[in-house]
Length: 619
Image (cartoon, rainbow, N blue to C red; front, side, top):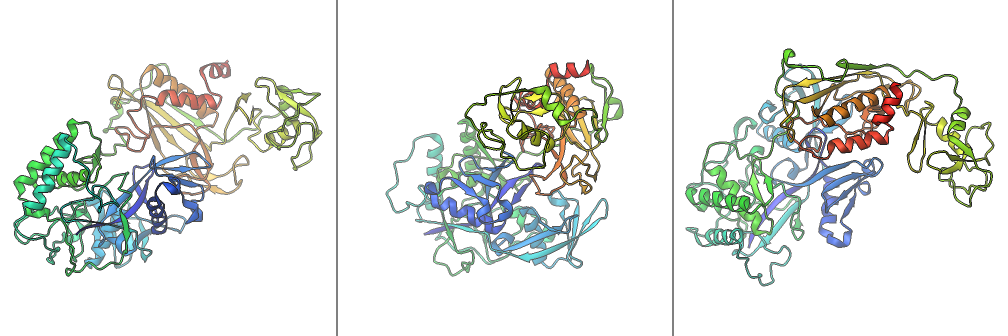
């Protein structure tokens, strides 16, 4: 029997394009639902294991995390790491944030830190993995290389992440039908991809020069936490397992781990004990891919890639394949072959890069936008409108109903023929009066509408709670800030024939006003200035003009709880989506996106902002 194992970490994608790990307990919970199969319903309620995640549900079919109270969708993935790395030992590295609580590092960063810690290095520079920080193990501090700001870090022990272990006969390099390895194999497909897979499997089994051996005991570590690609296979080299990872009792450098980033993993894989022994005296070995010579590996890898790409198979990114060594495409190809043998039609490529900002632009290249006055707009604190009482506002939009129908008021859920069920401050309006909104025709207790208006922004506008029709001019509670907009001489993906409109939002932290959730309490403003992008097309300029109206009406941002970090009393987006990626679309907030401009126009219309309403306000 052959054995392949890996630590499973479930992760979600934040708005910055970083994959953030769920806790070990949450990952175990998700894995349990995955193992239960269709009878579990295909969804995971995260609040069952962590009360802080009560609003979140994971849909396993679409691989998305859904937040029930806001409707926010975020991609999730089932990622794999070496069992000897930090998640396989239950080690979690965390940094102290501005609120004094602890935030775990991304899994890749935590693995890198743990590797340096185990090697007893006094410090490690994270620049090599894209972060401008130094970790000092003597002081247990994180130092920003640019600002020299220091934060505390800590290392703690948690549950070990779940381990997936799959066993199979020696004649197979991966279970063709997970969970049914004892049943006779189905007739092989005759397509070029499957023919190639079967030929390589035969070469792995019959082409070796000797019996399979357990992983060797010689260490092959990358110094200073900087990962190096494994040397070409040769005498005495360690064999590779089915994930393309160097195995052995020694610690594996984090950047030597080639991770399988596949959403639909064979459901028949079983979870083994995370503390199972990994000694060299096991009776089971791993596929000795290192016994294939380098030229054959490279040839098979190139052929596999060509076949998959030609057949239109989706691509899956695999990290740590940079470099000029001929073993790199070999590793990629063999990983693809083994995954294909498991019934996963994939083609491995290098991962696309997140491009948030355009190339540098000089001041002389920045131009004003034709047809749009000025290049910036400011908002100040809310100015209360005088002379309009709640009664006067409602009277403007309502018609009294003398004989109400036998229906429920959808605000208090009492019958319209009975008094309002709302129990709040006393009003001059009688609780049994009923009114009909003039445009949409929906009927409510006037007492309920009065309470709804008093609990809102009290800006002279009213929005039907049933159909969302807006009466008057709706305004928001956006805190004071600045909106800048101009042209830059670069094109967005999908819009090669025009330049780009860049919008820069700047909002400083401050104190909440009476219209905010917690008046008198301070609020934070994370991630500012925020850069957003529109194509400089006719429709793009139309969107910009309406965004300016939304900014003036204080509808772009609000103060609330971040759906990303869970932080309360902070500035958040307010239901009008913006594109914050310039040259990619890895997070869904970039280009190309053929429907974005139409979608944002619909979102603005839902806020009562259209060309007609904007023109009426200007008049």
